[in-house]
Image (cartoon, rainbow, N blue to C red; front, top):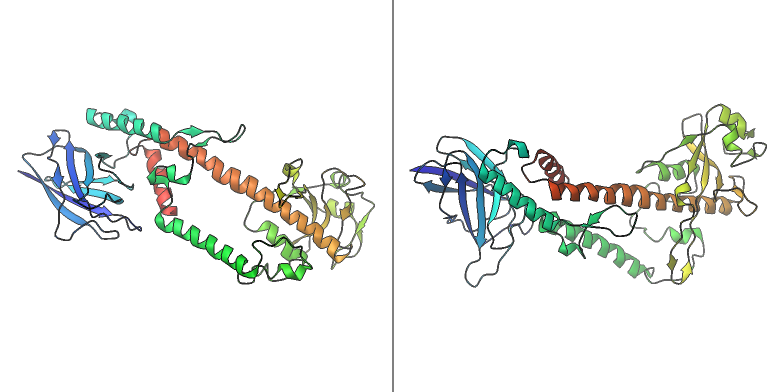
Length: 402
């Protein structure tokens, strides 16, 4: 008789526990074991427990283990629950250890196949059972992960009507979903208690805006937003911005060289003098030019595509010295300077900050973070089985993040 030691691990996430009966079958190159009930006096498979150990006895050695079959059946009068095992480790009679990574939800009564954890490409598969398992998995994946196009010109995305339609293995965990709901609920509740959630009144002054999130302040938002250095910190920190060094001829497209500019701590100098020294940079939001703003509360919103001239101070800090809210010079497109009235200059910087927010959310955040990442994720999930080396790299990164 050949005795195999089976160790089952349940992942340490919320609701990963199962009280259903779990069954396993070992499949090797020389045969397979009987479908064995993994029963224990310790009860079910609880989240975060170190392991559960069982013995599976076979008449003879199964040879090299290829895969395992797992299924779970509900107890009489008990509902079907969800189980999230992390892995199964099998020690053979010869003393070899085989690991079968799972890391997915098992939510039904069907039999699920899981391969031994060694990474293999299709050309490495020599066993007919391994090839069959691979083909079956790929067929299931192409049915689960289907392409969809939101609108023409958008990157491809996962086909699903709502988040609950996604396969369980790529949905947010219970803990993560709860965190999202709690964060949203606390923010909405705070606005509701302050009377801002349904308010359509205009602000009377700048100081009223600072009271909106008085409980969630940072150094930058604490009241010095009008300061040039603090203002640039809000533009530079937390996202990638491309600055373009400009020369005198390029600067003349934005501001006439003979016009003088002033800023705190420097004497009046012509713009060309500083471009020659390499201290002038351009921040260009041309990607927003021509975009249509939304209508909120039946009122058309405004969106600028500004150009901002930045000066590098002797202590290597960037400060804004000129703002133009539209791309092309025109009579109705004035250039705002620090020497203008306090609120004109502040309003121009607010428009730039709004444009920066739109550029970041639409380009850096939505497109380059979520939409493009989804293209690669769906392509990998559709075309790579769990034993493929690329899938294992993706799975390792995914679980290290979540």
